[in-house]
Image 1 (cartoon, helix red, strand yellow):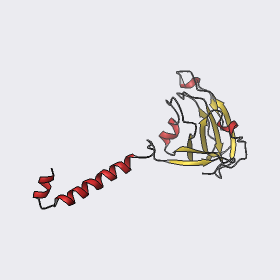
Image 2 (cartoon, one colour; image 1 turned 90 degrees about the vertical axis):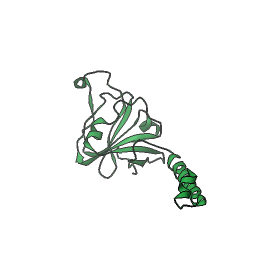
Image 3 (cartoon, helix red, strand yellow; image 1 turned 180 degrees about the vertical axis):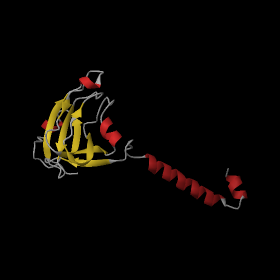
Image 4 (tube, one colour; image 1 turned 30 degrees about the horizontal axis):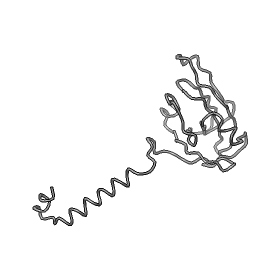
Length: 161
């Protein structure tokens, strides 16, 4: 390989420099935390706890949510960003883990919560209960069940994101 580059007029030291740069770039690009979804934000709780939340804005993603997931790391969540304030009911169809569901106004204040929301065991979507949607909200945060209680979250609290 080196000889073919050299024979095209590129000196071997330059080829080695380019190769070294490529290795450094590949190493840098592959290190660190890699996620499947680059749309994340840090959500800060009033007590200083921070979680990293996947942000969902597209209709398909808003509908799919946490479906089919077997776990959620303790410092992670999902933030649903609706286009405008309205009443949004959520369900646990095909959601496999219990969650705290937290509805937030456009100014990031908690307006409603469904704590320790159980997964829906039914295979029929029509048999799964709906939760929330009693207050106008623009954002909905889903975290592992128990996170809201552990961090003392309550209606009226401001979440920073």
